[in-house]
Amino acid sequence: MKSSDTIAAISTAYGFSGIGVVRVSGKNVSKLIKKFFGKTLKPRHAYLKKIYYQKKILDEVVVIYFKKPKSYTGEDMCEIHAHGNPVILETITDLITSNYARHAKPGEFTERAFLNNKIDLLQAESVSDLIASSNISAAQSAATSLQGEFSKHIKILENMLLDLRSKIESSINFPEDEIPEIDKRTFKDMITNLEKNFKDILSIATTGEVLNQKIKYVVVGRPNVGKSSLINSILNTESSIVSAHAGTTRDSIRYDVKIDNFIISITDTAGLRSTRNLIEKEGIERTKKSLSEANRVLYVVDAKVGFTKSDEKLIKKFEIKNYDVVFNKIDLLKEKARIQKTKHYSAVFLSAKNKIGLKFLKKIMSEHYKSNNSLESTVIARKRHIENIKAGLEQLYIAKKHLDNYHLEFFAEEIRIIHKLVSSIIGDDSITEKMLDKIFSDFCIGK
Ligand SMILES: Nc1nc2c(ncn2[C@@H]2O[C@H](COP(=O)(O)OP(=O)(O)OP(=O)(O)O)[C@@H](O)[C@H]2O)c(=O)[nH]1
Ligand SMILES: [Mg+2]
Image (cartoon, rainbow, N blue to C red; front, side):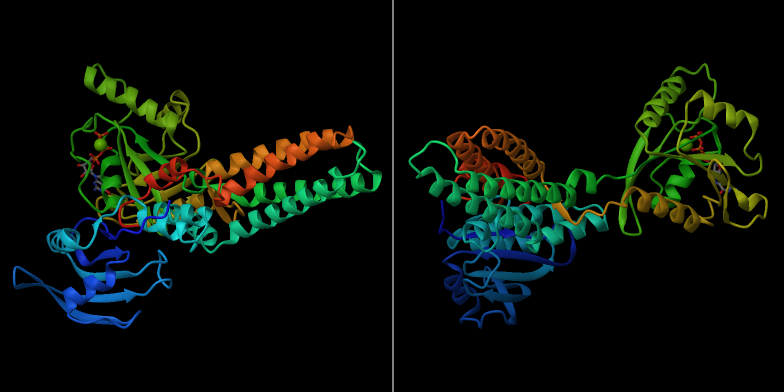
């Protein structure tokens, strides 16, 4: 399965930025360095070098050479830190791939790190999870898994199973078919310990989907209260159309935005009112749909009008739950921005148009985020891992029954299956190329 050809890719996101990095890994790296930069470089030292294209300077770059096995992939590697311009980065990659390397496939650098035993499969997967994290807890859990914390738990389980299997083997060699009483007691104790370990792992491992869940906010209210203006000031752009005309927004539009250190989704909707206009009616239908998918609602009112009986009616009619009320346009009242907590909701007084008091709204969002993420989870897990652990636990219960019934052969077979389920989590020999392809194809190129 090990491939020895040299691969190259741009490892930073596409677009314009301060710097962009091209990564190369494989046996041609030192040849390439010599050709490009005229001499060999000391490993893990940064060198300022020039790169030429058709005899003219293309860019001044920082090059770092990593000599195997002390590199991310475990092979000879080099990183070229150029200016973050797609034209420059693509030209450098072309120069490299025309003679010394081929383009890397998604996740191929990490796949090589796995194949060269730099990391196990669990850690490899957490690299991708770390990159995809949408909040600080997800990122920290992925980083913890990447450090090998999750693998450590799995390895303990694996060793316990190995130990049990070798004990079973020596018991099987007894002439009688039955399990000697003394062995049975030992096996029982070991099974109890295994069960505890399986359960402990399930309690600390949480899937990325759960950890990355974004709170979905929907902004609703009557026409013209300033819903679109509120969204624009949160996004700091003019994404939603704002006008003095009531009924401006006719569609539900979703945006993702970063607040502090987490990402939320927020949806602008059509103002709620009775209308004969067919398009506006359809817009209100879409508001209903957005409401049904929301975790939290921001119900906006015009501070000059206040929160009235008719707002209460609307909230009932549209079955709006988990809402806070935004009193917008406080600039017209010369009121101070603030939060006021009531029995049913928090009231935030602000001005969307003048961007006054937004920090109070963000404070409330932070509180929502914290109460949503009170999980004490420490490691990030894939569905694949959780499924294997759960399946292992189920098999363990079956094994227990065989043990109670003195069926040593069946018991041994169950433990063998459990062992396989656990080992494939960190990637043992039973992992097929096909499975690896599937796992690494989710990665981004250059990682
Ligand atoms: N003075 C003042 N005017 C505001 C404020 N926020 C919004 N407006 C004005 O209120 C009007 C309506 O704003 P929108 O953001 O379009 O309101 P909306 O709730 O999205 O309206 P619909 O999409 O029609 O339901 C516009 O003229 C805005 O400029 C504010 O904080 N202060
Ligand atoms: Mg609007």
